[in-house]
Amino acid sequence: MRLPVLLILLLSGAAPASVLWRGDYETGDLSQWTGLEGLASRLTVVQSPVRQGKYALRTELHQGDVASSGTRNEVTLAAERYQEVEGNDRWYAWSTLFPGDYPSNDTWQVFTQWHQSAGCCGSPPIELDLIGERIQLAQNGDAVWSAPLVRGAWHDFVLHVFWSSSSGYVDLYYDGQKVLDHKAAQTLPAGQYAYLKQGLYRNASITDVAVLYHDGMVMGTSLADVAPQLVNPTPAPPAPPPDAGAPDNPVPPQERTGSLGLPAGGCSQSAGGSLAAIGVLAAALILLRGRR
Image (cartoon, rainbow, N blue to C red):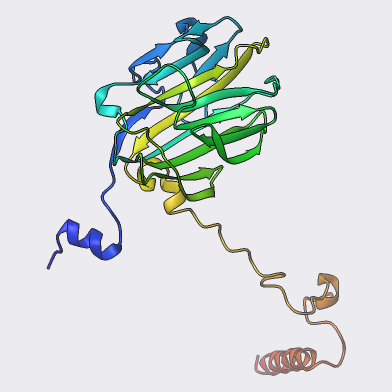
């Protein structure tokens, strides 16, 4: 008897998954996103470097690149169907690369954020930013996790947010490791919604030209949607035991056999047995010659 699919999922402990949206630039352009804030010429889709697929976003920012009352070049996802409202339970995954020559500045730089719907200013409810030589996750301007900035390598982020003005929380995976577990916080201002922005937004006082890359953004309803490799990681093959298959006391090949390919060493049982066999063969030959 075949079990219904839903029953099989319940028995296995699995839950139906649902990818809600992808902003991974695999269209070769910015069409997966609903808009941008800044200069389109500074937000370009490139084929190298990439973290996955064929394309990634290159973000470049200069002092004086001003949009929406700030120094920024960001793509946005602000359509109503993607707005985060009270009670939404969402998972997001993406990768970011800070090149080896990325400048160091001892002030804030936001590279991914979920901005509140009302007002132009103030800290967003959820943001990933860079201050000096550390990257951090901040909630309403307060850092809840940080790690040293490592340039020249892709870094993988998986963020889980329960959006609520009273009972919100977040989980965070960084480079495949869970670094924040069910951190309670107000993730949504009361009576507002939040929307996603990615690129670079920073303090207007920074004079250095900065370039960074984003790739693979995906939104879903479960960890399995956005990072299945963290749900069912591929186990490493077991290492063979030391000297597997080798004898306990290996003997060099030149000591194992004599010149006829027989076991060496004059008085061993195996040698004696082999010599006896040769004697029997010789006697048989003599007998056969006598019968001719």
